[in-house]
Image (tube, rainbow, N blue to C red; front, side):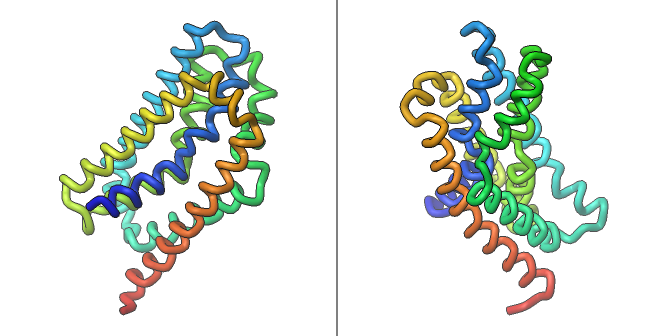
Amino acid sequence: MLSILATQFVILWAVIDPVGSVPIYLSQTSHMSTKQKRRVAVKAVAIAFAILLFFLIVGQILLEAMQIPLPAFQAAGGLVLLLFSLTMIFGEGKPGQEAKMLSENVDKAEIAATAVYPLAVPSIASPGAMMAVVMLTDNNRYAIAEQAVTAGVMFFVLVATLVLLLGANVIHKVIGNVGASIISRVMGLILASVAVANLLEGIQKFYHLT
């Protein structure tokens, strides 16, 4: 049980990447007051939680309604997660990529818009995170109680994300953009290994290989 919880925690922490969101949050809220920054952080995490919970609950139902086998989605999800992890490893990293995007919109964004985009989506509730929660709550593999545990792990990671955002100024002084990029790359490497495992498992189940 502990090993399952640890695996789920590592996967969700990697795809949500709370540390990688810190420089983005700081850049987007640099012109705001302390109270406004807190509102943005709370709202962004709440929206991200609602989105991920939606995919956790009805993601597989939607797939089945579209007649998409879950092993195929698992393989596709593993491939997407692998590509996502490669961008974390070889690309500019989450802080560098999203900071460019923010620099063009920071003057136009208001508090609500800032919380939704790009903090809630795609920084916190990334496409990789959406796919990850669907794969971690496969109705054919996990009981309701086990899926509830996954939801709890996801909630814990998002609470940690909120804590990091609220303490972003202190954290950024300690690790800086370079530190955040290094951590993002390490998490990308871990995520890549998990993604390959999901890809191979999905292919194995789709073709009924032993």
